Length: 142
Image (cartoon, rainbow, N blue to C red; front, side, top):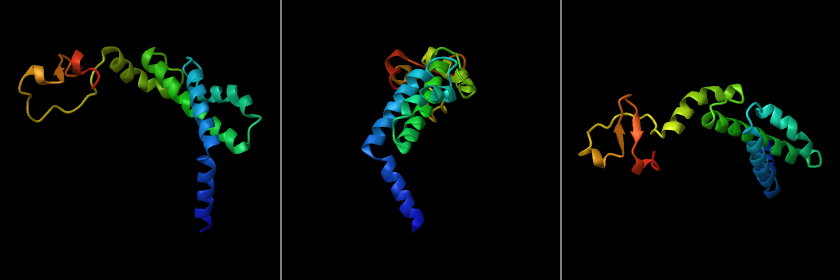
């Protein structure tokens, strides 16, 4: 029962409104700094560490976790849109994400079991490269 009590205490601290506000602030700031090419999550946490000196220890760790994950997501944004991976974790995303974002293609999926009645009723049409390209009317759905 001691384990369940410790888990409940940890969740109570993590889900406190003040801590949720600081994790939101940390993710936002982490994304803004993480978008810069060349700055990964570890340097971002090191740069923003002085912000947490005046906070309670649990709130500071929660905010730094938000900064870390926000910087990871920010690095993915530059990897996809600018084709510049800021850290090693964003390198695989550069190939697939950049092509998808620049050509506005639908995600790869299995062909339908029955062909559509007419090409006009289909949301996506087959291109020559065997990938599905979105039509202008369906780009919001793909």
